[in-house]
Image 1 (cartoon, rainbow, N blue to C red):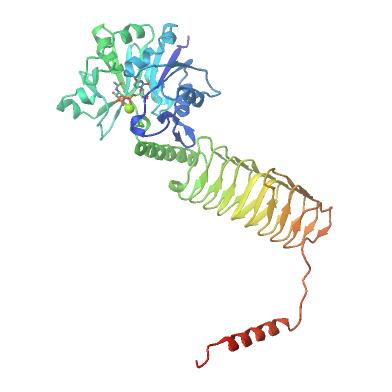
Image 2 (cartoon, helix red, strand yellow):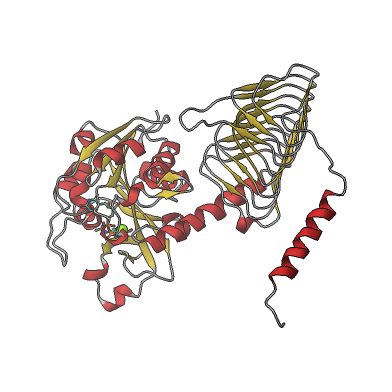
Length: 454
Ligand code: UD1
Ligand code: MG
């Protein structure tokens, strides 16, 4: 039978070193709160229940942790007395009885199901405590794993360590698995006789051993175990996340010319054989179809871009944009809440907002949908095979029929019927010789007003 697992995510810390008005687990990596990444990872490790331990900004943290994938219950740690104390905030959940207790941190957002699953297997193979460690050249600040004759005998916190122990480079990630039958017994024995007068979760290693339990450690990649305590670490973790996701996306069949300049969101989806040029930013909620080309310096958010489309360079797609198959949006165009039908072209210097653009329609350079009257937003509907001349203003609400033409420079305020040509501007008039007259008058004025004697 499958083993049951309770994941306890510690997220009650004060986040002092972030120097922030909010808890660090609310800070975003790739557009999603750190805590959301952690819940996602534990859900993939086959966890049955998540117990979230909250303190600072409890309501906001609970909200950010809620996902569709797994139920999350939360427990308030009223005082911050250390990681051992924090785990016991979820005592009620532990007491329900699970085979495995996974303890993880809300501020380790790059963790994946891999090491968590490996540690669960080690527990199933007979360990009572399994610590997830990682190797690093910069161990400062982490607890060190003290290994003797192949067994993990203790975790020593930096402040309590001897010089020899500080030189060790195998560190505690903070993540561990505990035998669910013994967890409460171990955890309630933790005391606070140490340099920080805190209840250290790490003490369960020695406690388990003193009670005849088996303690082992598994290794995880350093990049996955990076903890976030400062803004500098936040930026580093963002970099690791981006590198990892770009790599996955490229391996799935997407070309990136300069991947290090492309920024993805946690939920960005890109189809096979799409081409992403340098310096493209994907905000949340973007789906790019197969064979689409996203040219350099485009910014895309909340948009669906279907196959064989072309976007940019320098395009901005805002939420609610749908570019259907084979449509094109060119340089310095902004599209918002608009459905652009198959084969339509919006190639230069245009704003299309709250609109529908029909199949094969061409929108000339500099066209603007005037969708806002200062109070309300209004819609512009343009039919199929229409042609909007350059530098036109379409004052919404307005509709333009199939096959209609709008003359360049028009301000369109009324419905344009199918196949009609609409002029919304004065006709051109030529005043013959008038330019010469104006120039001569100007030159005469200059001569008469020049200072005398020069
Ligand atoms: C802890 C580990 C250390 C490990 C390091 C990895 C202990 C004693 N030390 O140290 O071995 O190398 O993490 O990053 O466990 N938290 C609470 N309530 C508390 C205290 C902490 O919820 O009372 C939460 C924090 O929000 C954070 C996590 O627990 O998510 C870790 O706490 P932190 O203070 O960062 O522990 P470290 O000193 O980094
Ligand atoms: Mg920490």
